[in-house]
Length: 444
Length: 74
Image (cartoon, rainbow over all chains, first blue to last red; front, side, top):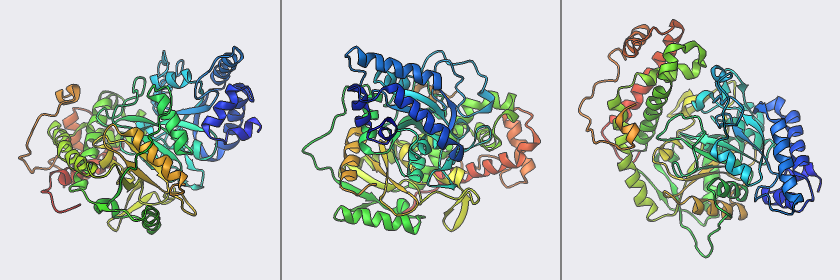
C-alpha cells in the first residue's frame, strides 16, 4: 500500500506501517500536506499549514524507528488541531482576527504534547467560529468552512474545520473542543465520530478558554476504533483498553429529544432501535430548563472572559460573536447562579436513569446539515438561526458534563448522527459501545 | 469573576423575583441597547444596537424558560 492510500487506513494500520518501516512518517506527512493543498480550497478547513513543523516531527519519528525504538501508538499519523490549542511559536487565535498577531505560544498545549509523545505529527491548525461561540463555523476572519458532503451546506461548529478535514479524508484524526456541542454537532453533520469527554477529564492546559464550567476538548476520527486510540493517548493511557464479557444496556431518550426532528432522523433512529431488537424510551423532566441554563452560563462566562477587551475594542470582534458576548457580559450574576443551581437536580435525574441503562441514545442534531443560503433550523414550527440553535440536543447533556461519543448513522444521502451518552467517568464504556455498534453495522 | 466560578462551588440561591433581566426588554432596540451600555459602563458602537438587543431578548427567553415552573416531561 503506498503512502497516500495508507492515509485512508485505520490509524492502527498507519502507525504499524511506520513502526515497521513500510512507510516513512515523512512520506505520510508530505501526503497529508499534499491533500490539504488539493482539498482545502473547496471546503476551507485549514487556517495555517504547519509544513516545517510537520516535517521536523515526522523525521524525528523516522529517526526513532531507525534506532529500533518504538515511536508510540500514533507513530507518524498526521493530524490537525482546532485553532484554539497552543502551538509553540504560533499565536493562538481562537479563530479571532484580533489575536492573529498575539504573542506566540511558548509551548504546546498538553494534549498536543501527549500526541507528539505518541508519535503523531501535527500538520495544520483548523477553522472554527470565533472564540468557539457558534454552531456553523462561519468566521469573519478565516471564512466559512463548507461541508465536504455538500459544499452548499454548513459543516457545523464550532469545531467545523476539524470535522470537515476528517470527513474530507484530509487527515485521519483531529482535535476540537466542545462546550455546548461543538464537537458533536459537526461530527453529526459531517458523518464522522467525535468525543465529548467527561467534563475536564482530558487536559485543558494550553486551550483558549470559552466557558470554564462547560469547556472540554475531544477528538474527531473516521471510526470508533480510531477515536478510542486517540482518546487513550490524550488520557495518557499506555494502550487502548477494551471491556470484555459485559453487555451494556441501552435506551433511547424521548420527550425533548424526540421533538423537532427531521423525518430522516426519526426514520434513522427507528431503524437503529430495530437493529438493537427494540429499545426502551426514557424521558427526563426539565430538559428545556437545562438547555436554557447552559445557554445562560455560556453567555455569562463567555461575556466575563471577554468583557474587558470587548469594551475596549468592540469593533475588533466578529459582529456575530461580539453582540452575543456583550449581551452576556450584562447578565446579572444571580441569573448565572440559578443556571448553575439547576445542574444538581438535572444531574440527579440523569443519574437515576443511568442506574438502569449504561448508555443513552439521543440525536446529535435535528437532521442533516442546513444549507448555507438558508441558515436556519425548524424549532416548534418556526425557523430559528442555526448558529445559535443547532445545540438543541447537545446542550442539555454537556450542561451536566457527561461523556458522549457522537456517531454517524448508516443513512443514505447527507449524514446525521447520534449521541451515545454515558454516566460520569464512563468514557471508555461509551467508546466500547460505539465500536461494537459500528462493527455490527448499526453505525456508519 | 464571581466566587462560585473561582471556587467551582454552587451556593444555594433560591429564585424569588420574576423580573426580567433588563428593564427595557420590551422597549425599542435603542433603549435596550442604552440600558446594556449603562450596565457595562461603556460607550458601545451604534453598529451593535440591533445585534445586542436581539441577543438580550434571546437571553431573556432562556431566563424565562429556566425560571418557569416545571411542567410535565419536556
